[in-house]
Amino acid sequence: MIRAWLTPILLALAGLLAGGSRLADGSPVAGLVLLAAFLLLAAVTSPLAFPRSVTSAEALRRGEADGRPVVYWRPGCVFCLRLRVRLGRRAGRAHWVNIWRDPEGAAAVRAVNDGNETVPTVLLAGRHHTNPDPAWLRARLDELD
Image 1 (cartoon, rainbow, N blue to C red):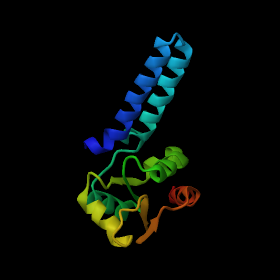
Image 2 (cartoon, rainbow, N blue to C red):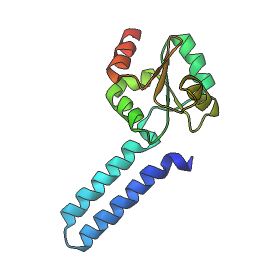
Image 3 (cartoon, rainbow, N blue to C red):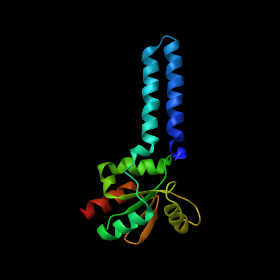
């Protein structure tokens, strides 16, 4: 759990230090801008930027029932963040599995990626797609509705 929050916490602390030093130097605007930028980065890299994760077993059950994709991800992954941002509101249509919180999900990802925990890995219609193009997944999600 702490591993997922390490990067956002460090970014927030760096923002406090950088912004605080600018404030101490007499540059309040620069200090607030730095603080805001680091806090924004912390928010974007936190697990809160992703839809609520479910277990791998639950995601697979739901995916079979509704035909929606299962997205295996982990906090701090820039490729996962890219996929999440590019999907926009459509991201909620997929079932998200945080592999750091679900050992079965991590094992599933390793099984299809030569033993590596390469994410994002998307399971759709029985096929795994490692680091798919966000536009491709957006189109698949649009087809499902």
